Image 1 (cartoon, helix red, strand yellow):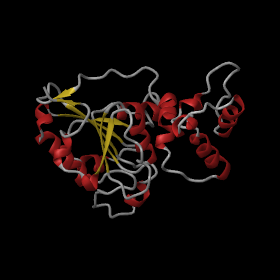
Image 2 (tube, one colour):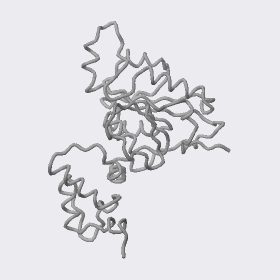
Image 3 (cartoon, rainbow, N blue to C red):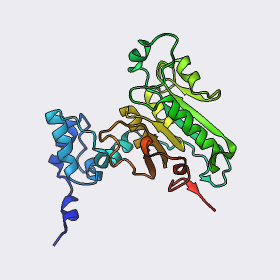
Image 4 (cartoon, rainbow, N blue to C red):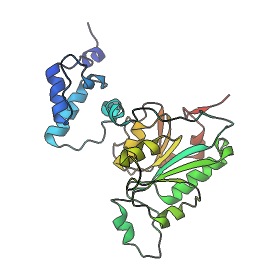
Length: 255
């Protein structure tokens, strides 16, 4: 008699598959082609999708259901060139991606006195925490060859960037970059370490990124529930310590 997991894995019928596709505005698979929703972890994912789109329910804990589906559609078609795996001792710089949510979150910061520099942002990690983690990385066994930074910030503000205290970094600003926001998403995700907040765009960067470590400043909610698949760990800022940088991180190989 089939077990519970086997019953959950029953494949969707063509009618059910078409219903899922229509709900999300996707193309209905052609006759004889595989149903993409059958790649989701369980048939219950279909029910989650239907509840979301029929009832306009805001759901933030769907990662275990949709990560494979999201990666299939939004991850780079051709995986970007990867650096050699990190080792201890290291043979190369540590690559670090930082998201500063600014485009739609800058108004509150602009309301502050002109003499002050914003350091805390809605949806991304605060500047003091960023500086602390970057210093920890440099001081860790991984930092012997330094860091290579990439910062994503729409409508980039020079004052905020200067407050990072980092003279050398690659700036991603989809307003003028080739490929727009999707290219920025791929470029930011292709890092050993991601420093993010609770912005949904930042969560998406994490979901499509290759194996590595993501450190998140998060005030609560479910956006990062079941988000550790594909070899990328999540550590929340409130539980972060420098020991995290080398302990239990999949991309660190110790000879």
